[in-house]
Amino acid sequence: MKRKMLSLLSMLLIGSVAVFAQSKTEKFEVKGNCGMCETRIEKAANSVEGVSQADWDQESMMATVVFDQSKTSLDNIQKAIAKVGHDAGKHKASDEVYDKLPGCCKYDRSEKMEKIGTKLEVEEVEEEVEE
Ligand SMILES: [Cu+2]
Image (cartoon, rainbow, N blue to C red; front, side, top):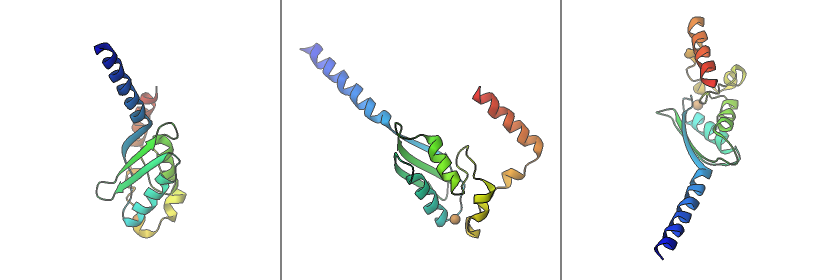
């Protein structure tokens, strides 16, 4: 009887772990300025299939997304946000889209102006990580 209870309990545990694994919460930095940015960023994230929740905080410039891992990935979501003009995680918005943003939304991109030497160093580090 006791053994039966235990196996039932472990089945329940395994079942709930599987449910949790499907939906994942991730937090990452998204560059932006104002309420318009917030709407744009959240809309872009929500447009990705599998995303159930998206929130961007203007103060901390952090986005929190909840998504179904079997339908999409963090990469996809960040790409969708970068596509509408906001640097998201390791995905950067193209200059073209960024230039089209309203004036109030032109967030600080001064990092890009850093010395070439620094930029090269960063790229080398990224390559090492990928290997
Ligand atoms: Cu804005």
